[in-house]
Image (cartoon, rainbow, N blue to C red; front, side, top):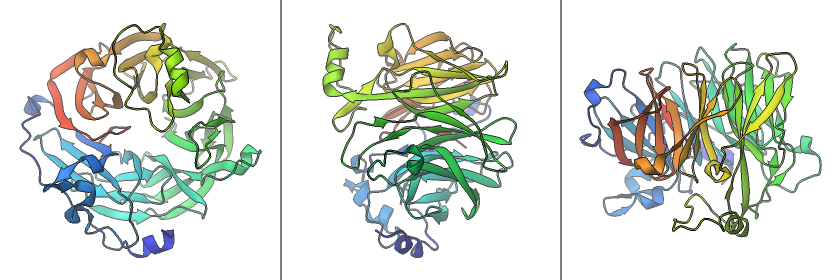
Length: 428
């Protein structure tokens, strides 16, 4: 589908949504203090049914899709902790991570390798803006971040996959600065890296950090060709590259990051390998276990380290940390910095674990086996607005709260709902 054709048909687009539930799966929500409005992308709407048919084929959910948008779309699940209501919508996007404006009221959803960028109301799930990307030949990079005042949004954009030219610069992505309400492009600058993905505004409000995969994957392939994984520190006002931080292990993709300050920057290295490599890796695991459901194509996830960048004493220093058992660090998915406890908290999806790392030096403080708590394939993680907890969501279902600092699970605040496979969790 041609992007211009799609954009021409999006005026007045409203998303169809299912009726709210009675909230019976949220226990003790009235005692929760500040309540969260959870937003979870669902990659598998084909596995959700509505009125006896797959939701992805439902006329009620697709009737307002614009002409020319023939893809499945991505579902979003909105869970209101205050009353236990759930609402779902199918949106015209190959969605990944949802960014919520500080103070709420607006969410921006970037696609990953897709042609659309959406703005929507996080409560009603009605679309308020639809856009393409700033230049021909670019697609969504997966993430976005609001400026501190919420008036603008920063969006990662990648070049479309083609043959690798042999020169990384030819494949550098970009960051667009857009009006938050309309998604109109205000400015564009280089991401200074290949396949930019995650993005975070630094505490000074003047710089952004961008996680660049640094890899190239052929359109018909699965194994990444690792070229230049890095984190770019960019001056927001000028687009000038301030620092380009390279991990000590440059043989894995650098996908996600969390930013505290110049001495509190961490990133996740993700390593993809073959099923044969996985078999060799797990050959000594003499117990019955399920096949990793987060694997796809011909590839799977191998252990990857957490990188800690520090510029306390001048030049940037970088170090990597792994749990004592590397099998516990398979498929690092989401991470968040908790300034209250000075900790980086990471979900390792394929290992069914949460890793807790010290903010000051990146050392491992704790490993939480979430499968023993009933939470399998932990994916999304976000600090709760009550200031006491953080939330972790399972890839296919359920969401649990953990107490910041002690990491004790709060069973009375658990939410039991099917989420239909996702990567990240956002809170409005």
